[in-house]
Length: 290
Image (cartoon, rainbow, N blue to C red; front, top):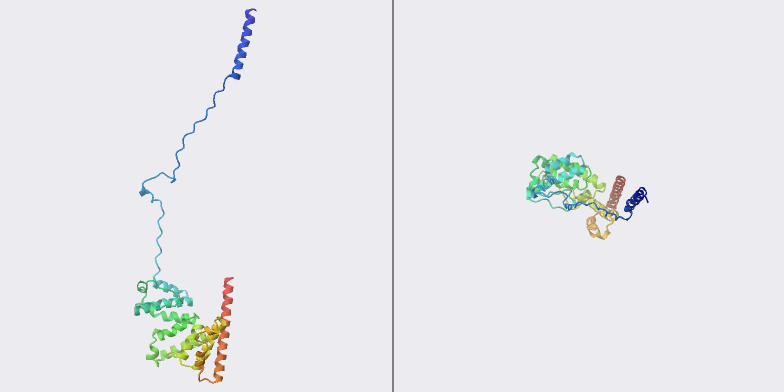
């Protein structure tokens, strides 16, 4: 074999060896990229700081609104023009008057429209002019048909002085007051207003400086009160105290059968009007709910 022939042969073998190396050479291991350590998450969401810094970003705690002064509350009620608010204004002023006289608020039976938590402080904001005006508020409530207002007006007496009925019975102003109040009482009682009915009944039967005694009217109003309780309110007759049984019999003592019959007819008419009033009130209430 000549040299020229050998070189190409060796060269061919060398090229073959070079080409075959990748086939049997071991593959280098794959390198996994390093992961940087993650710092632990903060439980507060922010870097901790001095304790005195912790409250700097907190919103201020709102302070409670100051209580409305009683005098301002009364003026607001009077300005509303609503007879029910006029009655509430009267009650607050009346309570302050009683507190000023006795050191105690009037006894409450649960039907009063408002309460006074701290009478010494609250009533100090009410001046004498406001106290004198309470009767005007009460009369406005009574004329507006607020139940109970007219009966309270009777108890307040002429211009807020109940003693005037006995100490100055011939005073023209007192006489005019009695005539006006009795007219209002009769009008409301005839429509079946419970408080006015009861006020007139007690005056007719037990007597009152503002109401003249009248046995037949007392019987009629007692019958009306009983029948309103039984027929309209659903009270069993035996529980319609004191207008059941012997009490009305006692009132009717001395009256003729004709007078008793007229009293019953009078009572029936009052109860019928009371039923109509309640029906109207119920229809208005249902309409408002719709």
